[in-house]
Length: 429
Image (cartoon, rainbow, N blue to C red):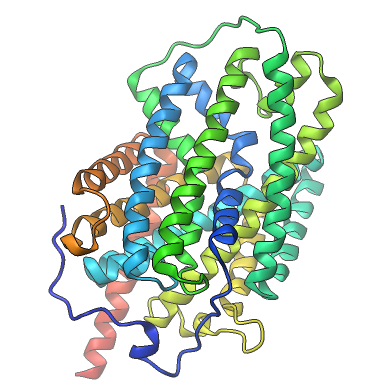
């Protein structure tokens, strides 16, 4: 376990540089919970079951339980850290303050690349439920990215308001689906055999759907009373999401084989004779994808803002809009990158990449929380150890191509930082 560096007392960004523009604290507990739930109960609840069930077989619920335990430990560590460091940036800030600049940079980079891939996944999932025409699907995904980036540009309160509407629609659709499936006659079906490795891989894939609470921590400068609001909102949002995913998993296993289709909820309601519900599920999946994409754009923009403030990203990204008080340069750059991804990649290739980056991000969060002194602790260190171990194990059991590519991207970023910092140091001397 990494040891904390020798460090001076932590100071807010306003103390370090009074010229930096700050974000407005407008969000309460309910708003933060909605953003977190909207990020977790997004496209994942409609799409993640197929790849997870293909490797877990009849042990899908075990994979879900493992993912939920790791997610809880990560949430506890994030909440404990956010109460002490209530600024934008999440684990990027925590890693810098508790472990050192390089750990913080690695966390921030993992978050940005992992969640940028998640943005592309959400946009492509939305478009998949809208049309079956491949070229049109990519254009629709691009339009969704641009439209929601524009919403974020106008201010975080609009983000929270629209997310609340989308989450409500998604939950209504899920409630309808669960009623249909639990009142239908159970159906017997054969499931593929699996192995402990397959169960762990399914947990890593399912974790992709749980990672939304990070968006709450990354918006630390925009919630009221962050020391109380952030820990409470993170845990409430996670408990709600776990309950929803457990109910959906039970319903799918009761009525069909989620491994046999890319749209398991739609196939399940169709399989029990509720053909009328299929369009409702498609609409619900589209709205859920938009809700997750909206929250993702907000969270990534704020992490990029924090990294740019410390010159770990171009300082141009640190700008805050004078009227809307959002990191508008960071969000514009994100929209451009995600737009390129949705035009050039596919859904399957970005999910594994995203999971690997996010798991490493939370591994650093757990290591950072482990170093906190007793007066800052809310949970025992065993929670941090379990979370760190779980993140590493799930990351290395993901499909190897995704893990290798993501690890290579991180290694290149670390190398570039080393070279540029070395040149800067030589120039100063």
